[in-house]
Image (cartoon, rainbow, N blue to C red):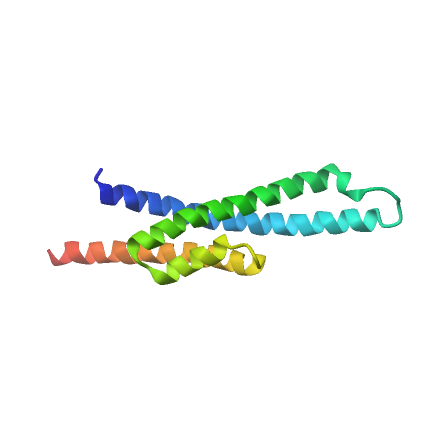
Length: 134
């Protein structure tokens, strides 16, 4: 396997992981909000610290891990976008790595994965056309 095929395979893995990490983030965001509301409403009248509930702690840890995994895959994506010199993809990965506004980051995570997927589809079509012309 030559170097170009390895880079393509690594980029496809990055594309899939970016998409799945974004979906996991969305699911855990909904779970985080749901558990937070359920615990807050059920313990509103009771005295005590509602942060010691194990469900909330587990969801919070998983949510934090999903944020860290988005940042890590986005950093690898930034390196890849710089290699192929795609400024829009670089912009998407940059916004998904900077976690100031979570919904913008989620959008950019999915947009970067979709853009990479479309890039692979275009290269497959170009290879097919070259084979047909030859």
